[in-house]
Length: 589
Image (cartoon, rainbow, N blue to C red):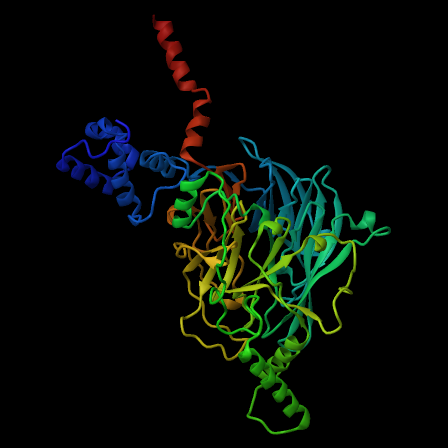
């Protein structure tokens, strides 16, 4: 019976079923217990079982796209890519990153063996091409990304050099014939790089100003530099941002604001309810929502939003000016370390030589063509502990026009950030939801009341990884942090663990030799995917979220499919034993 208003079995029978479920598989129970099968579509019973089995808080509503609790139970049981169907061992060293083409037909893998491999995503995945980057003085490949029409592949790598070298390079490969089209310098290498549009990519450069002060420059590059450089500009400076206390800009990515008003899944339960009671494709009016006090860093030299300076800011600037005048005139001041002195002088320079932030960061109807540049940064120490957001306007999305920022006034030497999100921990991964509405961030927390006195000595970091979720339309954190995965390396050895987000799920690697899958709506961990070493990267197929890839230090890429997909594939295969048995029976008869 479907959608019953109450239980159809006595309480004693329900209690026996609940006890059974504590020690058995849910769908196995449905096959074994006759009483259960008799009411298998009773929605009240399925709701009770759902909350108990998955330990979901009862105030959490059903998934907005679900028709019944029965369907939800079946979705979470049957559509999670948790069955290993193939292991790819063509890499000879650690596999660091995976990326799918937008069509889902291809995916790329990067490795410490210094190759980028292109794979054909068919029923049985096969290697299509491998490019060795050692002839270009690369040490290894670390990241890749297909452009929007899948015609080009961006590959990021690290140069051969001393242990403390931070230089890297970005290569652009044609998917038509796998030829190398261009190469772009990228420093530090963990900027990684990303596509802004079909033909332009973003890279980074770093200029040291002092021992712990530097300047990060983000460049827009044309992918066809060797072909077009004689006729048009092929490179243009996007932003120039000063870094304090040994911090640098790293891990750049681009979010498209035009997709915010048609999200695949709303994570705010009240917003879900409002959307379902109005129309299937709502337009959200944020109206007077304020960013004040939201995700603002505790200690920062950069404004965390776009408010105008108040009296306190003016007093602080006057204090810095007085401090600088005292230094120049030789007046004695309290003892201060060389690092503190450098930071104070840099703060003064930033205040007087920085272009003000954009007046309104929150998207509006007129911002459909605007994109956000998102990156990790910091203000207290070298480990990345903040997320910086800078708006990219339509006229900035081409290499045409001024090359070195000639449009700035002489006193606007640096660009300010439009928004800063303080994570209070070491950021080790970021990923966007498919609709670009939500930003997922892997981080390892600092101690709650820690004080950083030396930027070269960041606080110890937790072994437990927190997976935060931020709404890029409101610039607020939503839901509680997801947990389950762990990491063990200290600050100075900490490395990026790539995560990925599908319509309904989010997945991440970990140092505990497992990949993890969570449900985005219910905030629950659904599966652990085992490897023999650290899992560095995960990737959902963009057209089939029941297919997931994981890459590990064990030099293996594993392919995971859902139980439902595996059953469908197996149903289409011939069964030789049964055919042989039928033939023997026919022979006897």
